[in-house]
Image 1: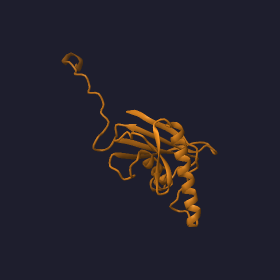
Image 2: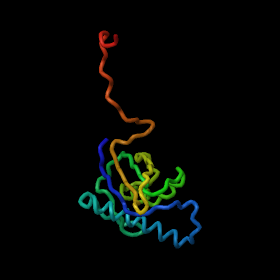
Image 3: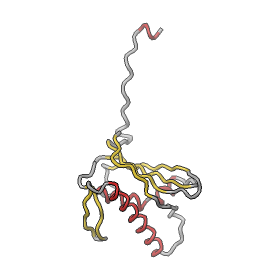
Image 4: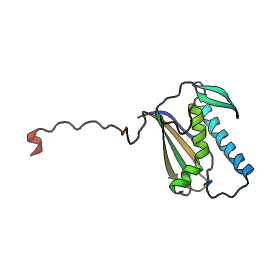
Length: 155
């Protein structure tokens, strides 16, 4: 697989499913996560990016998105979350990466994968890896075939 992008966004993500915050507080956190993600993506791939106007303001996008691809989001934190909470915690980052690629996050050309990495207290972030070609159930990674074995080697 070829790494197209491999960056770490230095933000602390929490489970949004159990938050009981006011909607404005949640919206402010989501905007901060998306802005931090856009900033890191733009900083890393400035020459390959273009600023596109959207109803929510200017957004940075790939000039030529590398589709199809696999996006792996790895949450770096001191504690693990269960699977559905990881997806909720990384939703804003997923939305921003999809916008960066110029697609909707449900586009079938993008395969989304999630992981977690446990670190010491105070070390946190989200690692974003975009690889090409995509890895999915329909398109498993291809390993080289085993060399033929001669009858003498089998004995």
